[in-house]
Amino acid sequence: MIQDLWYKNAVIYSLDLETFMDLNGDGIGDFEGLTRRLDYLNALGIDTIWLAPFQPTPNKDNGYDIKDYYGVDPRHGSSGTFVEFMHQAKRRGIKVIIDLVVNHSSDEHPWFQDARSSPDAKHRDWYIWSKEKPSDWDQGMVFPGVQESTWTYDKKAKAYYFHRFYDFQPDLNMDNIEVREEARRIMGYWLELGVSGFRVDAVPFILESPAPGAAEPEMRFEFLNELRKFLQWRKGDAILLGEANVLPEETKQYFGENEGGIHMMFNFYVNQYLFYTLATADTKPLIKALEATRHNLPTAQWANFLRNHDELDLGRLSEEERQKVFARFGPEENMQLYNRGIRRRLSTMLGNRAQSELAYSLMFSLPGTPVIRYGDEIGMGDNLSLKERDAVRTPMQWSDDPQAGFSEVRDLIHPIITEGPYAYTHTNVDQQKREPKSLLNWMTSLIRLRQECPEIGWGDWIILEVNHPQVLAMMYTWQGSSLVILHNFDEKAHEVILTLKQKNDDTLVDLHQDNKCKADEKGTYRITLDAYGYRWFRASDLSHLIHRQNK
Image (cartoon, rainbow, N blue to C red; front, side, top):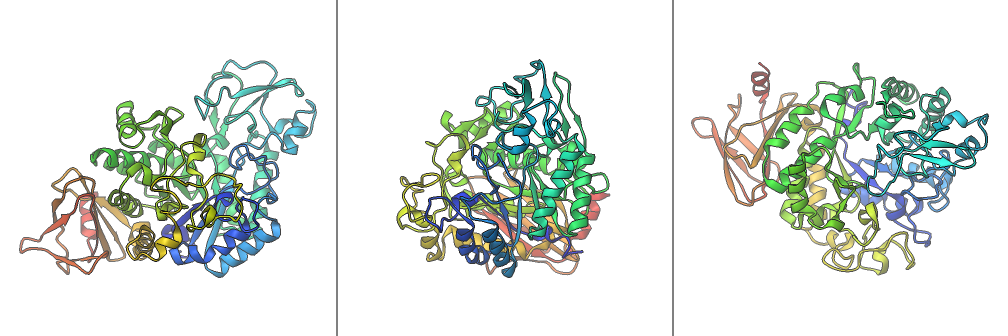
């Protein structure tokens, strides 16, 4: 069971091939470059890589506009270099999951080119059309302020086509059984080449059945069950990791009533309140978000993250809450995006090492599986001169060599960061490898610690009451072992008082340093937390606290 559910205790590393490592000298990252850096990821402690789309693409949307689902874009290599990469990753015990982007294709895909050629074309019904201009043509945009419509007229087709995203990404008609069969065929192809699962892009838009007009689209959750069954039939331990920014009460439909949906989902809801707490030191909304997303599905799992390849989406916060986060982490207009998010990296938002450590310690200790973004382990910055989300998609900074060790040529897919405290000359892997107290070495220790704490991925948890509202205290228990983890979001130090009543021992063992905390004669622990401090403790069996709360 533990081996089959490997994702419960994994650490996932998200990277974009084109900005990770260029080995062939064309300024664009490739599979040969990534293969060369597998030893780095292995030493970091990563056991799962999540690859952004690398298939052939016009590349108008970071590769998410795919024109051939069964190949490798020549910029990144070939099917041969992909297979060699998979072989080398497997040798190191590293699993690979890839993006499954089947809610839309590129408008350059042969399917769409055929579909627009005639009303009787083979692929006409693979997309969503309207002869008349729909009444809701300018509603439901994913990128408000940048995107102007969701229905666009095609002169050749003599009809309007639906696109939830940009107009060069026409939506596939998932109501068409042939489209769903093709989606499964795509999954089967990459499973045969060794991938361990898929990060499913824009899950809600795969499930909806949009039609011209303002009616609310029907959601077809049985489509997820079809994907799950096919996946388990082809490869029993493969997973589906869903991108679905939905409300907590909707999540069980995505996981499935009988766990027949997706295995994992990004916890966008907790992510947004996590940043609210980082901005305000008020833990109550975060605690409510954690409780709201609690589930009792044994094989389901949350994927927790701080930043990803998109903007920090704050759309689930109230307007007042969102403005507080904007004021702290994105006060300038060019730092904000789509009227709901922030287009900055974590280190530039927080601005200090102490809070960065606090944020990552917290994320790694939340119920679920941690996902980190390439470059965050060294505290990479952003480039706000780049448009929209490209600000956080700059090349990996490997060294202080020209082009940050990413490439040997000057003309790159995106410019490297050359100015300020986050310039590649100050922030890079080689430099931090040699500094014992660097963020990179601290992150390596944190990853190792998380993998030594299966209670977080597998166990039951509760929030412990403490005497300071700025402190979050959590307790996990699994198979007779327990963890107590505390985080102080305040800029001031605090002493936290805990009463745990351990059954067999009165000692908490600090997992970050050689230290122990003993209870007094009343069974009370007094734990000091520095400003933005955090403590991880292992304890004896505290399952009685779980049972008491359940009662």
